[in-house]
Length: 137
Image 1 (cartoon, rainbow, N blue to C red):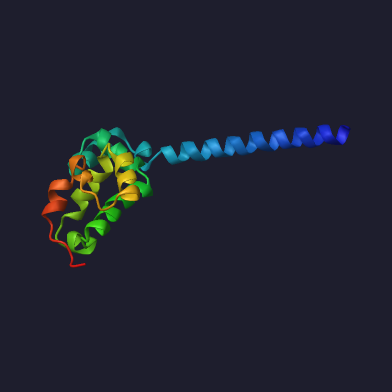
Image 2: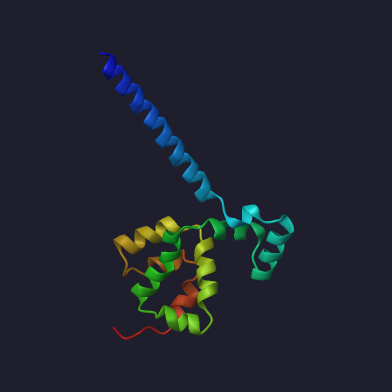
């Protein structure tokens, strides 16, 4: 009986420890390099990039999955990302996509109905993306 109690105590201690580690990792992921910069430097960086300080924070905390949305949309549309980058459009498209509040809808549309034109009604990049010539299929 004592061994069962000790095993249970060890398991709950381990669960508490792994929960603590998971929480620390989550908090670390929510911070960005901006958190360690002086306020004046963050303001200057935001100004240099042409975004608000709040938008700069949102960009810094964005995930890799969010960054892939634009690439997925470009692939569906048959638009070459390298050509966009060479023409100087990619950074603005990426910034606009990263700051978009419709990511969940976009993910759903890309997964459920990638060929639909519905994305044009909510995508802040739609005017540019619909004006770009497509690669032949």
